[in-house]
Image (tube, rainbow over all chains, first blue to last red):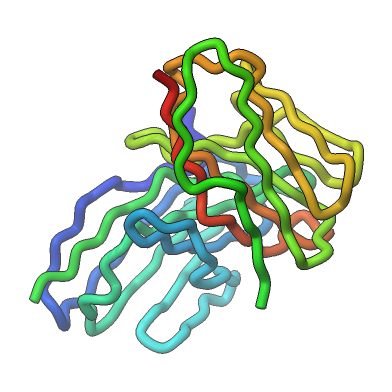
Length: 109
Length: 113
């Protein structure tokens, strides 16, 4: 059973659209949650942390549902520059971060 | 500005060769990690280290070893390279505290012929 599962996509959306990604995790003891972004042929970089109360950073909103063990990322008013792979990341205490395989987003003009 | 550097962006080796991949970070981070990334398989953890001279196996350590003689440097060693080790190798570091943000190097694309 995969620890962190994501829909691989690709999600192809027009500029200005709203798109949402979900991610599920299997370890109910997981404590910390993140979204990383990886551009084509580049290294992953932290996009945002995910807090229990939900959090927003500009056009990006992250939410956590502990009862259902899923995390979401919502992108509003998509830009061409949002095209990337989005990695869901989970930490379960005293172990390294666990990365999902990523969801690929293509924003089309 | 935080920086993780890897010794090579592209590397081509022959089957059976011993391969060294070097990673250096300048952030005084305690934790360092080696991953490989393959299409459809995502990031897979090979080895990690929480302190100098310490190492722990990740999810796929077979065929690899590591060395951490200095805090800033974490080396990945392929004792006898095989074609199934052709991959993108990514090094990362993070501060102490297991949930700290990981900073990644630019990656080394290794091809084993």
